[in-house]
Image (tube, rainbow, N blue to C red; front, side):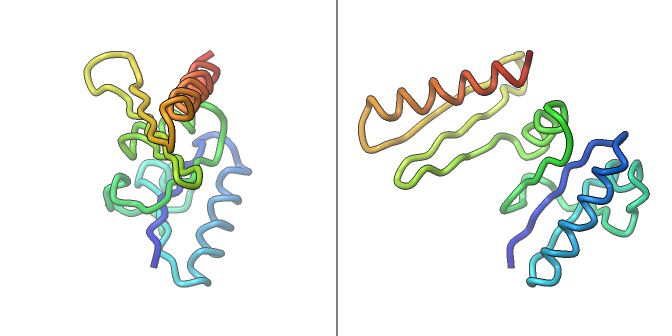
Amino acid sequence: MTGVVIVAHHERAEAAAMALDICSWLAARGHKAWLPPEDAEALGLVELGSETDPSTADLAVAVGGDGTVLRTVQLVDGVKALHGDSWVLALPDPEEPITHVWAEATSDAEARRLSQEYGRRIRQLLR
């Protein structure tokens, strides 16, 4: 069973419908899905709210715009993206307004490329 936290935009009706669809789809396949309590309450989906720590989820799904993606990253204490034998970890600093990006790959050049690519993606989200 995979644990999935759904973080949804509070002011978009389509986010509520999509979160409900995602939770139903996952539950039908034997996975546990939940929304943080504040999201569940704001969207009228209180039955899907859980006090389960979002950082314990195996997967986080953001339903909304760039702000929702950033909030998701903050809730789960970073994001790890897998790329075959390589990975990238983006982790917001708890005390400074910066995000640390680490990458591991089969070569130094590929690790640099991945960290630069994700650094660029993060900067674009913040614009």
